[in-house]
Image (tube, rainbow, N blue to C red; front, side):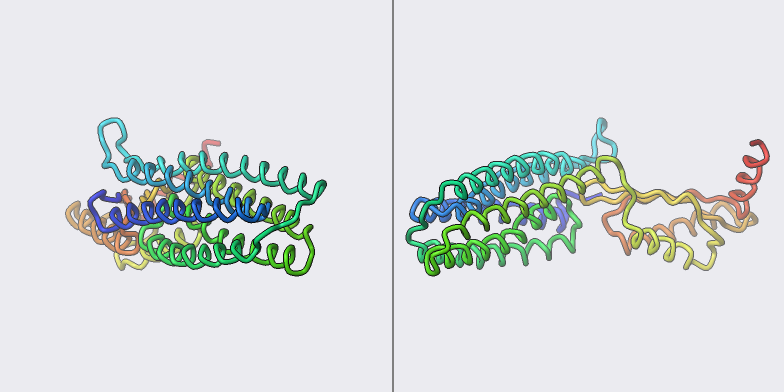
Length: 305
């Protein structure tokens, strides 16, 4: 499991805090720019950043709770706190998408001019630079920790890069080319993108809560590692799930029935070490069976039916 004092734990905390700091700064900048320009597309970007701030704040607390060590009431740790935070994020983000869509449609019905677009463009350019730096850092942390909470945050901010770029285009079209309808049209596109992000986060959180299996590629990798041990004749009943940054991996290995108990134990330890090397944040349980017992049991059950 993820040790709260480990390097991965520290990386997750730092990434969560960095997201809150960046989101706070962007909210202040975009609020001023929206008040100055009146752009509904910029309002959409402001709403998106407000959501990022709320979501990142939730993530910061969720990561802190998820990293708490297992206790008597939570024997498997607290990793699913990340999934709970993800569901809350998805609900908030979906609501904001609906609000932004309503505002954009209203602006299409009653168009308003966009003023001082140059200042809005400057703010959005600065937002792109800050967001890009955060996304690069988050992706590095995700590769190390596989954290759902940090992944959800990274989805937000990756989307923000596109959102911020689209706002710049909308401001240029509205002010420089006399196309005011571009502002609410781009805002509708931003609303759709935000809604898609909500669905992505909700699906990932539900997969974790419902104990969905790890990706097929990971399961195939586990099988290759286990069967790569010279003493392992076969394996069965591979079961996997994830909670936060911790993967839970369980399986049976089939060994020569003439092996001593000590040798069986040693082989199990060797297989566990090999799997742990590939999945360092995994909790691994191995059950050793005599070779052929799985097939014999299966044939017996078929005969009983």
